Image (tube, rainbow, N blue to C red):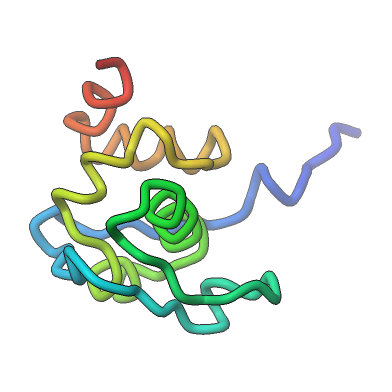
Amino acid sequence: MERVLYGDVLPYATPTSLHELHGPDAGVLTLPLHLFWSGLSPDFDLADTDDLVSAYSAVVREGSAEDQARYLDRDLLARAWASLRLPVRCRSLWEERFPELRALARA
């Protein structure tokens, strides 16, 4: 019998369009517990590259399409995409849906 790992079946949400992403593009982004539960501060300074990557990685991995629309900004996502820490299957799903992200990852 072939093993099925949780990571192989974990569902990942995506928005229908990157134009739906209308989250803040500056300031401090505070993520709710269902998106960021590490015990560290849920506050992220969007001007800080490390904070941006951490917050956006969490929202892309853990968020519903509604969460993604609320917390992600399209231009910031494009800027950070290549640096996001994502499972291979999650990144592939997003890049299949949004080929422009794949191009950014290669640049």
